[in-house]
Length: 242
Length: 241
Image (cartoon, each protein chain N blue to C red):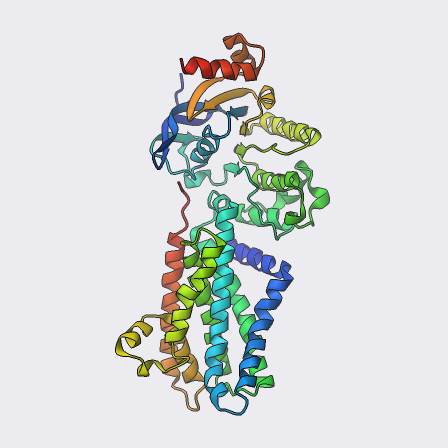
């Protein structure tokens, strides 16, 4: 556990040293939420999609930051060095997941506060569940990033995984059209992707009289995806390479 | 003559490493003595790094056997007893020198000796500077400092003195000799032949094959030459009639 937390601390120190990344990570999502609220000023649209947008940002940003960070570890030789030391693969993977999970939490808190206090978004009565679900989305993005970076040989490829792996999920998850109105095949595909459950949970928890059982189930599915992706990610770490 | 003697830190038997269709290491057998500095010499592309990675246990091998301190290379019991410094510094550019070394110390579970390794590598003065802002020589010393943590029994160093000025190079060799005198086994690769005379034992590698093994003076005498460089050439020609 000490080695996991030492890794978490090291990753967070790296991010904190990089002031511009830290600023972009924490401030940009809130500004974009503000932009969307402004665009839809005279319509009810913002209240419908704000929850989903707030969930989308941690997923996307954590995916990008994690896949680049772990790719750098692979390429700079630091991962190889760590794997010759008494660091388990779980220490490495969980260290990253906790670090970016905490960043996702900070990001969600800023984003939700901005949406509520500045943009007049009504998050419903279960604010803690709402923020926890957004944070889970950030961890999901991290898990996806750790997994995807195993297949990227360069930073260019890693960045391209974003339109390849992230955009389809957002398109199918119900941001434009609720999943039950999609063509049957796409509806099935949508329910194989984690983002659908995230959007579902956030739509439910911000509703007037939410069914918290359904939210818990959605979050359990998200948790399952996180566990599977982190496991696959750790399998991609090899102590011996060619 | 090469039994599992307690004097040997590393033993390599019939090691073959193939990468795609190229044979990088071809039936290599050699040994590295404990508490001595063994120099691994050869031109670039001769397989030095691959051999070192096989000894460290990060290289996938085709056949043969590599034993380190009586355990198969890469064994988990070796993870605190052997340290490896790669040719390009494997450190975090966006952390300070001290943050880098402290993190690796936390992974090894040896919190106490951060200051002493920084002093040994002459980095105490720039401990709070970001590694990315340091010179190439300083960066590679940060990598070395991390490897010295916990006093490993075997140190595998891939070209540790490349790009260093002569004074720094001399002070690093002093450090290596001090470590060897304290019982540490060092395997140091170099393509600079004049560093060979600072080693206790030499392995001459060319095109994935071992040309010769012996002390610097022994090799010079055996080949009837006057320098390690000429001895290397003589061995290389003798090996390929």
